Amino acid sequence: MRNHTLVLACALGLLSACQSDDKATEANQKPSSTEQKTTASAPKAVTSEVDKPQPATGDVTILDKYATFELTSDLSHLSDNQKAMIAVLIKAARIMDDLFWRQAFGEDKNRYLKSLGDESLRKAVEINYGPWDRLNGDAAFINGHRAKSLGAEFYPQDIQKSEIENTENADIKSLYTLVERDSQGQLIAVPYHEKYKDSLQQASDLLKQAAELAEDPGFKKYLSLRAEALITDDFKPSDLAWMDMKNNAIDVVIGPIETYEDQLFGYKAAYEAYVLIKDLAWSEKLAKFAAFLPQLQKELPVADAYKTETPGTDSDLNAYDAVYYAGHSNAGSKTIAINLPNDESVQLEKGTRRLQLKNVMQAKFEKILVPIADQVVAPEQRKHITFNAFFANTMFHEVAHGLGIKNTINDKGTVRTALKEHASPIEEGKADILGLYMVEKLHHMGELEEGELMDYYTTFMAGIFRSVRFGSSSAHGVANVLRFNYFADQGAFDYNETTGHYAVNPEKMTAAIASLSEKILKHQGDGDYQAISQWMNEKGQITPQLKKALDTINGAGIPVDVDFKQGPHKLDL
Image (cartoon, rainbow, N blue to C red; front, side):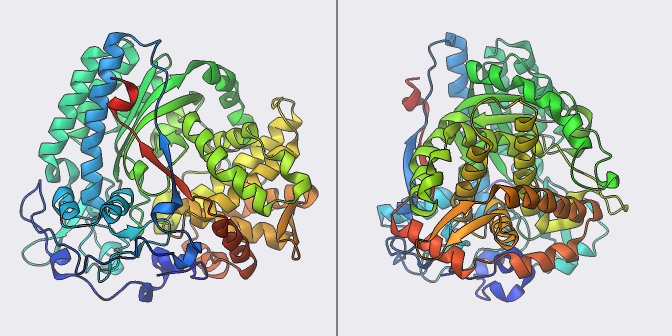
């Protein structure tokens, strides 16, 4: 098992020695069927480490890392058609769940789970979508199991990075293709809509059924277009329609979206879904902030060349109760806010929508963040740990994805393609730091009326400890390690070696926010893959000081994340 002293960049593929040479034969074989992988391998031994303390988490076992949380919402204001639509959307989401299992692990889910005789082991595999601990650097927790491929099941298990880098076939690098080998061993691209044809048709039919039940015209249009997108892999029309929705009480995010699962290159999108109920009261409070994006973009602490792009003005902010997570969004650590679409052309044309998942956010604040603060934050600063600050920091993280730069300034293409597997952690780091930069600016402008600036600083600091625990397989976890080490080097935190407590130094925090913002924006705009690799090698690791804090947190038995009890039965549907 890996521990927190492992260099995080190593787990991202900088050092090939981090991958086990034990590649199961069946994992290298690709099925001829476009719809179902037929070779399911049981673990070499049913014995596992699922109930044993993990080296990275002290006395916490894999299942102990998760606090159970029930996904519910008040549906009393919805019509009968809307309630029926939620049940249909959950059915479609479950198909995304099965598709992600195949992208992440490749084995037949039901057959594999039945091969495991232990209920706790099955539960751990279900949470992690495979036998690898997503909160511990994807370390295998079933004895004898192969290491998780950095490319998951998007590429052949024997793939060499140079094969992808040197190919002239643009489809190989597409978001929506699997890379396989033909009978001659040559790489070919297989579109998702062909590989998963039967499942995607079922999901498409369900979205069409939901569209018939939809009462909001904008949502009806989006569902119809998204149904078509699932079976064509042409998502831009539905992304644009999703951006145009303003009055829908129900929302669904569904399809191949984020690229975090592809830690080899960050090229391939993974299937996921969220079913959401809008919180009208909170959404109304948030509506005004998107209008500040163009002004904030102009004031970013970086040279003009890195902020020439203008954020779309159709961006909006809303708060939701999540009632169902599926696929990538439900694997390991759970997101508490959404910023989409990811298509850079849509972002520049219309901006993005930022969805704050308020009920899940509240759960993580109460079950995880407050207990962490009680362990590592100086007592005199604990009064600054507030839900309003946590909500705002998270919200502006999502808003900040729209700031900065999407295309390099030196013709290296988009930031995403130029930085490859580093693009996701650096983008998350950018959103974190520019989100805090926005908080500073808006607070000074008098637009943030609730709380002191120290509330946002201190809650942000405690949030770093929370997110670092997501592990090296998480883009958010890597981003937080880099930022913690940067802030520590800049003196933004005062550390008491005797008590093990941290306190924010507000003056140095302000300076560190500005300098780190500039550093990240320059790396992105330059498309500087080598500089980012070097930064991760030097600063992407848990220091002894940070490890001591994490040991204290883990020793207190504080969960790392949440596991959902969810479904129509939890909503009385």
